[in-house]
Every structure is written in structure tokens, then in C-alpha cells.
Image (cartoon, rainbow, N blue to C red; front, top):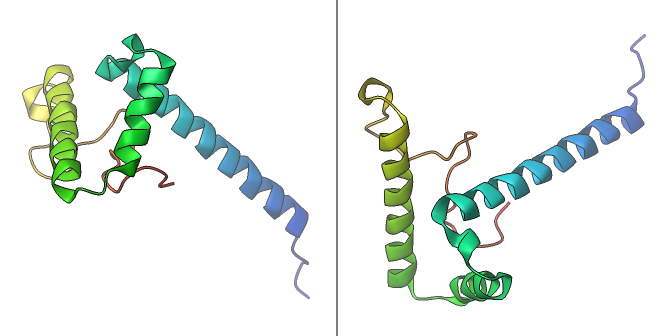
Amino acid sequence: MRKPRDYDAELKALEDKARDLKTRKVQQLGELVIATGADGLTTDELAGALVALAETKDAGKREAWAKRGAAFFQGRSRRSAPASDRDTGGAPTQPGGAQPASGGAGTA
């Protein structure tokens, strides 16, 4: 006979994992703000800029911002990694293994 599943334990494990992922996301966003120098902005300025970005529907502007962001991450990897360790093809990565978001605000 099979052992019955402990749904409560599985649910708790999933909730713990979701909480850890959310915490890591918030930490990485904070690190990104600091790395870009945006920590010099006031909270209102930073929030206003993010709201404007989220409300922008112009694909050309969003693509230009995405390219600038990709260039930022590629520049950081060049300064921090030896030439032999650089990934010359593919998407740039953020410290911690997260990919930079290009799909817009609110993606999880």
C-alpha cells in the first residue's frame, strides 16, 4: 500500500519556497538600484521613473531601454570577469543568476 501524501507539508514547502523567491527578488532589485546609481535619486523620483516606464507603450522606447540595460550588464561583466570567463554569446546575466527583465514591469 502506498504511503499517503502529506499535503500540508508540501503546501508549507511551496509557501517557503515562494517566500524565499520573493525575498531574493526584492534583494536583487535593491542591488540593481545601487549598481545603476539610482540610489542617489529620491524615492519619489525613482517611483515616478518606474511608473513612467511601466506606462510606456511605445515599443521603440522600450527596445532602446532594453538595449541600454543589456549594455549595462555586459559592461559590468567585462569589468568583473577575466576574458576567459566571459560569455560572448547569449543573454547577459545579473549577479545571482537572474536574467534582466525585458518583458516589462510586473513580471514574476
